[in-house]
Every structure is written in structure tokens, then in C-alpha cells.
Length: 489
Image (tube, rainbow, N blue to C red; front, side):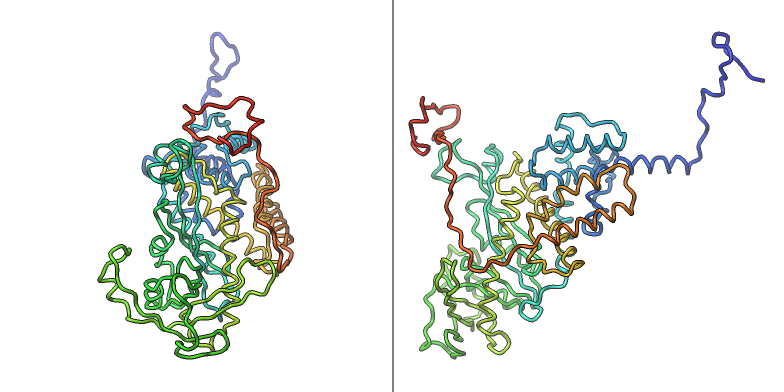
């Protein structure tokens, strides 16, 4: 018998209730909801390269609840931000809103507050674990055969600036000759790269008082027995050569702060401009960065090889230089081979150019030291990820990865990302899109242009604004500034 209400005739009371669901149905519904909230599909490009276990919701207070800005979504939103041409937080929020709209979810608010708070909750240790995992994956790729298959690690330093905040100035003070309020905090970065793949293996961050050598010494754990260290004259140090040699690591650097040894004083002459020499241990001084005990543990002399290289290729500013190396066997490694290896050292300058200029890490955007560190790490994670895409595309299409354009690969990833994030896309269609992405990356080869020379000059003239020579609150602008030169106070 059907029961009816006295006011709504014919309304069945039983239809107002919900049918009881089993526990399996509830779990399946919850899993579908969680999968639906994973808004970014960038992980499809880097499956196995970014450890997903580190992006799972933690049991602690931070990122413990499954919301739009979950730990996974926040990471990929941050990832998308550093590879985006705009690089702003509002751009990320708009992108998240479009993804939510495609999946019929509630749109996040237009304010960037929720995203910035979620990004702040990302643990720096988790980001470092992801970076180390990406470095190991890239390092496991077959190399290009430098020095008979030995791993060559090239090291160099660079600088980045950031917003002028009190916290940033305390951590990374500006230059002394700049007035207060007229400069920007500057951080010093020393990084180790794999010469074969271009992947970043490790890095250290310091301030203006941090030289490259102390930052480099913190990364000695990156090296393994049998590796080759490649660096410029800034790393020419008796202490470092001896310590690395004692660990089974050979070095190839350029001579600095010492007078070249002549053939008369050499132990043996291997050939023209190729000498076997020895360095005596200098006298220990208190201003050095190591203790007397560390200094006394070094050998009294080092047997090294000195190679004088004369540059005849047009386009180089340097006409000649000296290579100092612990690879003293001329039969195993010829002078021409070592000179060609040092020529490849220029690739580290290109690696930093890809990160700073192409990806926009030259001027950071975060206003606190903690977020600045996270922003740097995220740039390196994105850089390694793009390098991995380039390597996989080169392997599948049979091209040389060193000839692929990093900027072209980054542009391709930017344009392919919206298609990967489409709401209704099958696995087969996603695989086809990824295959097309690999084709686009592999087809963009950089032309081989030996001896190309570009002057380090700026053609476009700056606008005729005054330079900020006093704090902004005290600065007085000169009227009719167009009548004055831009660099005139």
C-alpha cells in the first residue's frame, strides 16, 4: 500500500530517501572523486620521472585534506608556473579554474591567496627528494662516451636576484656600493651538471660572500670514484685537486694564480705544449677555508699534466690557455682529446642560460627566503624534467640530444599542456598526443654553426627614465626627464 502525504497527493515518501550503498560502492565513489580532483595531467609526460609517492596526501596537518589545492595539484601548479611564459600566480589560478571547469568541478576563487598558502605548505625536503630522484634518473641514461665512457661532471657558478624585502636582504644582502633601497638581494648558486645529458645533479646556494669553491666543496658527495671533474680557472686549487684525486676523481681545469711551468723545469715532455709537472704544497694560512689538520693531510707535491692550448678557431675571445689535469697518461688521453673536452665546458654556460634566461630564473619572484629556496628547487626540477623529455625524444627518433633546442622543447611542452589536460581524453588519444610531442621536440634541431660570433652589445636603447639613486620614498623625479640622459641622476 502506497502512503501519501496529506498536502501533496500521490507523493511517495519512499522516493525521498537514498538507497543504501555498500562499502565498496562508497570507496569507488570516493576514489573517483579524488581522481577527478587531480587537475593537471603534466604527470603523464613525466611518469616514472617524478616519484608520485612524494605527492600523496600526508597524514600530518599540511595537505592532509583532499581539496582543489591538494599536495599533488599544488606541486603541478607550481611546476606549471615556472615553465609558463608569464610566471605569475594569477596565471596559475586561471589555469586551475579552466581545468576545474572542464571536469565539472567547483571553480576555485579568483584570489591567489589559497594557491600561495598551499604552495607555502610544500615541504622543501620533499622538493629536494624529487630533485634528487630526477637527477638519478637522468644520470642513469647512457652517456655519449666522453673519455672512454667515464662520467664527466661540469661545475660552474652564477647569480640570481629577487624582490627587495627585509627578509631577503638579511639572507642575501645587496652589494656594498648600492644605496639602501636602490638595490636587490643577490644569491650565489654553484651547481654540478652531467656533461652527457645536461641534467643538474646537485647545487648549493650562498650569498655575495660565498665564493664558488666553498659551495663546490659542499657537493663533493655528488662525485663517485672514476668521475672526471671539469671546471674553469675559478676552481684551480691545490686543496681541491688533491682531495678529489684521493677520492679517485680526476680533474680537468684551467691554470690560475700560478706561473706556467716551462719545459726546462718539467719532469717529462710528452709532446709539443704537453708536459708532466709537479706542484709543491703552498704554505698554510689562517685565512684559508680549511683547518691546519686538513692541510697537513695533503701530499707535499702533486704530479700533474700541463697542456698549452692555442685557439685558432674564429669567434673565441681567448687566444691561448693552459689546462691542468690529473690525467697524466698521454697514451690513455691525448692532449687533443683533453683540449676538446675542455671546449665542451662551455655547455655549462648554456645550461645556466636555459635555466635563467629561457625559464626566467634570473629574477626570482618570491618574497621570503623559504619560498626563494623552493622556487629555485622547482626551477631545477622543471629543468631536469624537460631534459628528460629531450633525451627520450632523441632516443626514440635517433637524433643527438645535444643538437635539440631546449627553448623549442619548453615551447612545445607549454603548447601541448592544455591538450593533455582535456577532460574527455582516452589513454590511446593521450599516448598519440605524447608521441606528437616527442616528434615536435626531436624535429627542432639547432643548426651546427661553428665559429659563430655575436658581439656582447645591446642594440635597443633604454627609455630615458632616471636611475633610482635614493630610497623610493625619498626619491624626487626631475621634471622634463626626456631632456636628460637615462644614466644622469
